[in-house]
Length: 295
Length: 145
Image: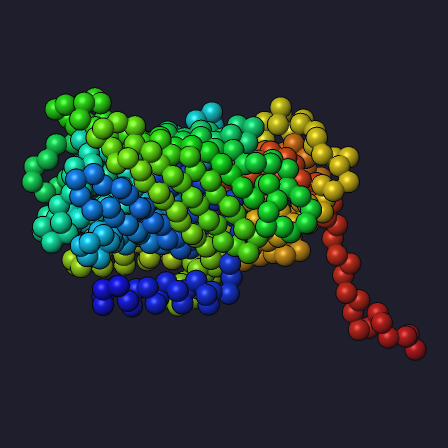
């Protein structure tokens, strides 16, 4: 691990193991797609995700990111991402950060529930977390060695319209993505993500159990690019299909696993994603006390 | 990292720390129940006769609700007490509707991410709540002269 990543890693570990107020929630299994559920107000969710990707004409890689997701209100969630990656036979590097905000647009549940997503990305060209696929992102974009790829700096604004509905236990989510790279005069790029999921059981059981069926949520995601302003469509784009499963443990942890498969020759053949997260309630109240406000 | 990053972080944390949460003692928070549409109010709890529903609902309450409403549902820092006539006299359908839709403006998130049967289990538990007996005062305990 590079020297400058060590303090951050220590902080994450300390936070995870010393927090006194964990909260249990029903986390979605999606890794790329967003549904319309926001973080509970005052709660902080700390998440770690990994993506292992195969790379033709280059070295396979392991990209990773940490998310700090905070429920500012019941209609606003704000999030900080820290990204990094290891390219095999090359190096491990920090690749940038993202600030994300999601705003619930309607007060109540409706037939379709829209959420507005706004993100600022400050990443290098070596970023490989593939949190979203957009524009003409293709596998060959990721072959450059880290030393060269990290010379490129991207400042991107990303907008998403998240549409989601839960009915009879099924969640269906659709995300439309529009991205503008603020450097280099690049055009608007577009992408999509789709997701469907269902818990393995709808009724909860009386006992506290790790392996009860209601603790598991399974589903599938599909995501890919839709070209850019000048060449909108599927030409020279990559697409993925990925089964997903989440395991919400009674000990307050959530584990996610998702093997993803490239659907055309422009896609990585295989992406294996996994993640672990834990939610901490009362973070907002503690912060407020620290700043001298009322809890 | 650039200065704008620190500024953005500061703004985010300051704004979130300033986010308003309603007072749990504000009785108008119960007014939301009256906004449930008649069709929702009239819905029956399909788990009303399920002998496990209250116990399971209690477990779900501990997991998802106790943080705001308190471990005994008598109110917490963020959520009002549920052991009041406004809640206890509400129909199961109205409580289910409120759980599903939340009161987003006042800080209660939507809970439609919990499957319907689990929301009904929660309703069963909430309807089973009864006010705890008030502790006797010292003067009541001591024998009268």
